[in-house]
Length: 337
Image 1 (cartoon, rainbow, N blue to C red):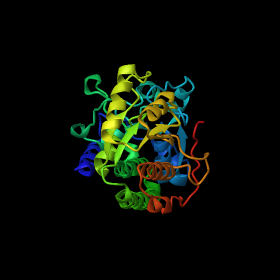
Image 2 (cartoon, rainbow, N blue to C red):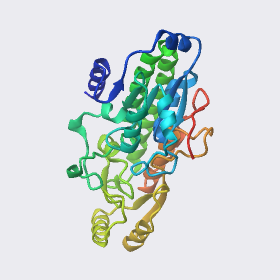
Image 3 (cartoon, rainbow, N blue to C red):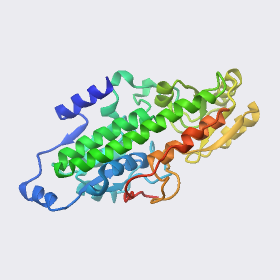
Image 4 (cartoon, rainbow, N blue to C red):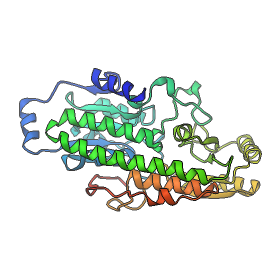
């Protein structure tokens, strides 16, 4: 159902979420045919990685949100407006994640450029997840689709289709890059499903600081018991901490997971209070290593996170760790640090 929904949107122009003006002029088209690469702007690093992997040498990719930054509260610097005014395509997650960047893009992009909200295209509104960190009354669904391999593939499909429409001369490259990425993501998904069987019965439960795995949990049969970070991204109240402690004790969760993007003394205190292990190294959207490293990618990010979660919950992750995450070509995208 999701794929057909996406195809309908792409086929119809997706006016609400893919904003495009007239096609390029003859001179611009000729310039592209002579080898000028598309300039593509992206927001969070996992999206930058997926776009770069699909686009390969046919595009120039520049990220906007620095790695290790809270993307929910990120305010782009005025200098980002220049990038947005030059970009041929801007890929954002959507689903209300990057509203300040979205507003800046809408104010500065050329008429013939495109603004693509990947999450908004990939997820029908009927499947939005609202929860403790993203309550429905505030109107912002959980936006973290990219932590689910299912949606990473959907993102890559949309990227391939948009780039192909913008630069048909590179269509074969986009398709080949997409297919190699899809194959690796499917292998990772199969490995997760295999390794999660080693987790003791009843232990596929997540307590995290940042609520970034709701869609993954829904598709892979895990349960998100709770998340510490409130919907306003402030420190949790004492009452919220007490509630989470009670949940952890009631559920028998063996490990609670923090994030190096969101260091939390409170989560460590909760672990001490409940007697469970505290693992503080999950990387919600901060890619491992440094730009140019083999593991500095969406695949490297999710391989690390899923292996860490499975092992933290009492299982073993040999299949996840064995997945080949190497890319056929170097990633030359610009990742702000």
